Image (cartoon, rainbow over the protein chains, first blue to last red):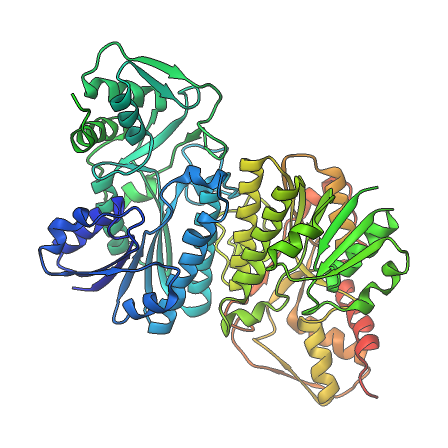
Length: 317
Length: 317
């Protein structure tokens, strides 16, 4: 049993991870500012009595340092969840990404906490020339401000490993989807259909194509990586083994909605917004070779998520 | 003729770059907080009347945004010059590196300035497994806080290219040495010998080995790269074609000092301090293939620098 702090632990991915950590018999401190996290996501895990909830912001270094007392391992998941915000307000990802990660590392240093697991992202690869993209790919030139904050955070973590001797596990996530989702393409499609079941607007030409991973698979994979990789600095792509296009997602969401005669309308262009990567496919050999198996591949993860979120959100019919 | 802003333009490398930019007929705005820059480094260039000097900090976004008016191209060189500080105070590089770069980019965006050249560093490669290290090397795991700030800055710049359509040139510097140097191994050795000509303490075992580039070569190379590389995002290693060990540097500095019977004392260990990279050698094919030629290779650059800095600093004999 370990005492584990999860930043963003009340969020979409964080709350699922907390569920899995509790199942495995750990004590968990959830640190969340509830900007997108929700207390009801923690209903089950709070009821076990093994979760302590701290409502705090990562930019509050003093509060964070206090919460870090006696912690063995930090899962640092908190971040601005909406990658698209970076185009209008430019300092959101810098603050809630890079600077927040600095604060996590500094509060660990002050408390002698030596272990961090971090949710980085496939967006650090930018528009990679090699797909599926392996972990050792270079150069790393993200095209979104969100991606810049993930790369900046990775650099801070590797510097802390090299300078202060901590141990780190860096996960580079595919698109993570599933229940409790609060943003992203499936979430958006459902809300659009709820508003107008006769048409579905799709940003871009629909050919954008990415790896998707179901959120419980993702949570299990994180814990698996921490338990099975033992270098001082470990970095592993987390994703399923294939991709799904945005057109296909639109089709799957419409199928699951039960609506007929929905006209799909593409806004055109090769990407949904400035900073969107048109195609992302991760090489997941490192994860699979370590003995991990996903429950869902991309297509099934999308269908499962569409079904679950339609139940959560409701289509008003 | 362009109107060019140079951050850190009164510093060691910046002031040499300003000299070269003025020679090429440009108007230059120097933006410097004089934390390590010196007005006397700009003596020659100021006398031409084509340099405007702004004393300001990059963390002052308002002042920076004002200085950015009418600028065609920014050379962003300002940074914490002492890579070793990162082990005692941990937020110096975050502020003077990553956040400062964010402010440069944001002030460019506000003024519609579309071109940035940036002094990154070979330290973004961390302890690279491949040497000489090419530009497309991955993964990028710097081991110093200084390195983290360079990687974080690169990510911000590539995000600005991808999101706001600016054009960028990223230079990954070898160790840059030469006249006006205010830090680094040669500088330290001369100061140690000045204090005690009978012995020279060398941090580490002396086997640390890196590429060195003379600062005027470096300044010419930066301008060459901006003029000869035309992608939206360009990234080029800047260094000479070979390396020099720390032992050899000690030997060269002692030779140039004229002192005899200096005992060299090694503190031991494979690196000078936590966060020091024991060996760094850059592949410079991209630079050389573009038609650039260094005046000095590593060994000659070290000897030339030792000679010049001994003249600047004086040995008190």
